[in-house]
Amino acid sequence: MTRVLVPSGALGLNYDQTALERGLAAKPDIIVIDGGSTDSGPAYLGQGVSKYARASIKTEWAGLMEARAKAGVPLVIGTAGTCGTDSAVDWMTEITKEIAAEQGRPLRLAVLKSSQNPKALATRFAAGKVDPLPNAPDLDADTIESCTNIVALAGAEQIRAALETGADIVIAGRTTDTAIIAALPLMQGCDAGGAWHGAKIGECGALCATNPQSGVVLLDFDDAGFIVTPLADGSKASPHTVSAHMLYENSDPFILYEPGGHLDTRQARYEAIDETSVRVTGSQWVPSERYTVKLEGARIAGFQVIVMCLLRDPRYVENAQIWADDIKSKCDAKVRDRLGLRDDDFTIELRLIGHSASFGPLETERSDPIEIGVLGIVTAQTEDLTGEIGKMLNPYLLHHPLTQEEEQPTFAFLFSPPELKRGAVFEFVLNHTLALDDPMSAFRLEVQDIG
Image (cartoon, rainbow, N blue to C red; front, side, top):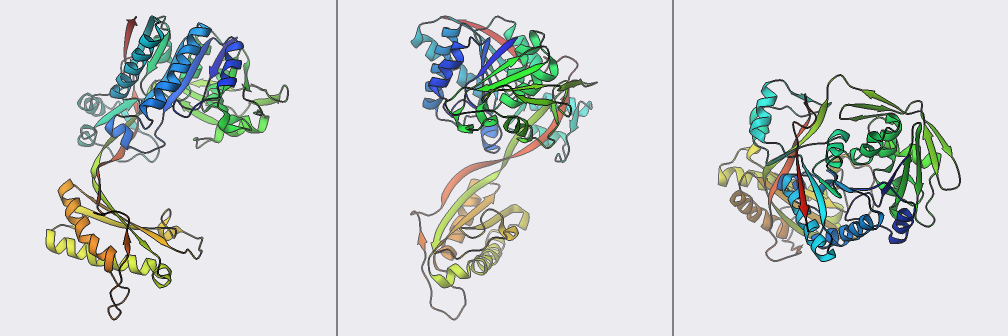
C-alpha cells in the first residue's frame, strides 16, 4: 500500500493545520501539493510569475517542510509558482532555500524544469512532432517563436525520475495535476487504474468531499484501487462526491488523458466503507501507442488601458447599452480618423458592470440596477497607442449625452487620471501535444544538496 497526503488543492490556498497533523499521524509515504494552474488566465504563464503572494507561499511551504521533516518522507510540489516556467521554479527554489536555512536542516532538492525553447519547439513542429488537441488554434512556426513562455506538462515518469534521486523535496515545473500524486503509487506497483483515478480524485484536496474548502485528504493506494479520506472536522466523502469529481475540469466524466495513456473509469465501483471514506475499484489505465505531453504557450496580445465611470441617473442606467454603443461607434471613428488606424489595429470594449458585463448580448437575465459601472477597455499593439486611444475615450465617458438635443451630462470617474495602464496583456496560443521518444527529453532534472 502507498499512502499519499494532500494538504490542499494548491499551495497558497491555505490548509487546515489540525487535519494536516492527523495526516502526519497516519504515517504517509509522501506529501504532495499542486502549485498552480491556468485557471487565472494567460498572464502568469506569459510573464513567468506566480499569482500568489510570496509571503503566503513562504508561510505555507515552511509548514509543509516542517511536516515533511516530521514524517521523514518526500515533499513534492507540481506546477511551482502557478505557471511552472523555469523562472517560477527558480523563485520557488529560492524560497525553499531560505526556509531550509531558517529551519537549519540540510536537504536534497530535485528540481524538474518544464520550459521549452521556442525555436527548438518550432523545429520539432516542422518535423511533425506537435499535434493539435480538439479546438486548438491554428499554429505555425512564427506563432511558436512569438511566445514569451512555453511549458510542457510533465507526467508520472518525470516525477518518478525526480523521486529516484532520493530527494527530500521535489520542486517541479508544469505538471499535470494528477502526476504528482500518481507517481509514487505507480513506482511501488499499485494498480495503475487506481493510481491515476485516485490522483484525479485527490488533485484538489477536499473538493471531492462535503466540506470542499477544508483541504486535507489522505489517499491509500493498493493493488486493486484506492481509498480517499478527508481529514478535517465535518468533512466526509461519499460515492456521490467522489464520482462527481471526475467531472471537474474534464470534458468527459469517464475518460482522463495523461502523458502515456488514458484513464477509463466506466467500470469503476464506488463504495462507502464508513461515514467518511470511500473505496474505488475497477478503474482501468490504457497505455497509448505514442508518449505525448501537452504544451501550453502564451504571448503578448497587445497593451491595454482601462477607464471606468459610473452611471446613476435612472435614464442613463435604463439606456446604458444604447449610450455605450453610441460612444463606441463615435470613438472608433475618431481613432481611425485621427490616428490613421485600421479596425484590426485596436479594439475598444465597453462592459456594463451590473448589466451585462459577463455575457454581453448573450445575457438573458434582466433586473433594474441602481447604478452601472462602465468599464472601457482599450487594446492596441503599443503602450503609446493605448494611451492615446484611452484619452480619446475619456471625454465620452465623462460627458456623452444620450441625444444631441439634451443638456450635457457629467458622470463620475473612479480615479484621476481615469486611464489606468495595464501594460502588456497575454493570450494562450498553444493547445497541442508534443510527441517524445524519451519521456525526459523535453525536461531537465537538477539535484541540489543544500545545508
